[in-house]
Every structure is written in structure tokens, then in C-alpha cells.
Length: 254
Image (cartoon, rainbow, N blue to C red; front, side, top):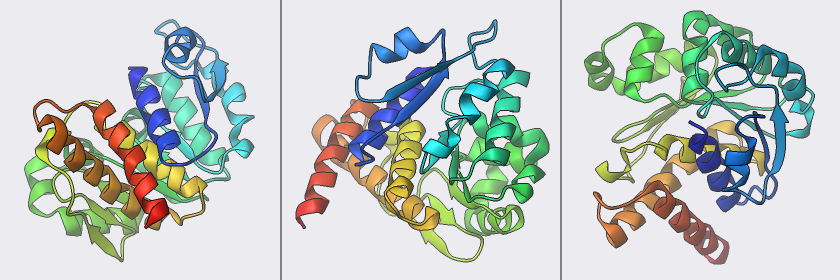
């Protein structure tokens, strides 16, 4: 589960964010630090399951003002403690929040909390997570991706990134449908990479909506480049991250 944090952090760094502060349960710190050297680490209290403890809230929230954007949910697990952490961060953050994976599942029982949040929130569900958020079947989501996404984003005052083939990005009014990407990207960690890119772009000054659109496009393009090198069956998320670095270099020179 902590590999998700590693992937998100690496993607953010490859996207030009410059500085990442990575908050992890203290029990996970040795594992995560073995794979990353650039982030600032913020180990906080862990509970008996090894995830964030409710006692970690203070150690997390005291760092919120440091951040220009916050990626929340990658690999954190879903239990009473992590749900308390997610709700507290959403309520206290002064910077845009990218809510992914377990972060989305943590607020599922109280999804209306999004209407109370004072900062932009970008949600990045896959169709299964989206179905759970609005109590519909996955098939219903896939049959009407654009209108369901617009309706949700408008009602919840958020930006929605509905992942999958032709990822939909909407603020409830404008809609962007992505054209990059391939089936080889449907693997664990791909979504964590996307969240890291979105967070990096927001931190560098893009609006949350523009950051989400740009990140989705480049995420898919990095997947297409990796597929050309290794094939859709042989590619890894780490291959995509490497290609992301090459893409950022190309953007700087174009």
C-alpha cells in the first residue's frame, strides 16, 4: 500500500514540483525512505494496522500551510482513523486537495462533506469508485460518463477526473475528454502517478481544472510512449514515470 505514496511522489518530482513533503505513518517510513531520497519526510503516529492513527492528525495538519497543493489518499487504507484524517485535512486545508483512491473511499459515507470544503478539490475516481460514490452500477457510469461526471462535479462543487478510456475531466460546466493513453495503463499505481502529476501542476501555478486536464493528457502520453518501448503488456508504471521526465524536457524546449 505504501508503494502508492512512492509512485505519487516520484511522479510529482518528475513533473517539476521541486519540493515534496511526504507524510507517512512512522511504521512505513523506513520502507518508503528506502525508495526515495528527494522528499522531505514527515513520519507521524501509526495505529495498530500500520496506517495513520487519529493521533497523527496534529502532525499532519500542522504542515498543511507549507503546501501549495495536497495529494491525499494514495495507499492510506480505509478505517476510522484514516477517515478522520481525510475529513480533517479537507476541512483545514488552505490549498487545493487532490483526493484519490482510499481518500475517496473514506468520504463515501459522507460525500456531501465536499459541499462544505472551502478550497478546490479534485477527485480522481475510476468507474468502480465513482459507482460507489453515487450508488450506481459501473455499467451505468460507463454508459453516460460525461453527464454523470458533470452532474457530480456541479453538485459537489468539485473537479472530477473520471478515469478510464477517454478520461473525463470536468468542473461541472466545461468538459475535457482525453485522447491519449492505452489499455496497458490499467494497472496498479497508474492512478497514483496521475494524482502526483496533478498535484505538481497545481503547485506550479496552474488552476486545478487546467492542472487536471494537462496532467491527464501527459499521463496518457507517457503511457503511449512506454507502450512503444515495452508493449502494453510489458510496460510498468515506473516506465511511464521515466517517460514523463522526457516529456517535461520536451515541453521546456518546444
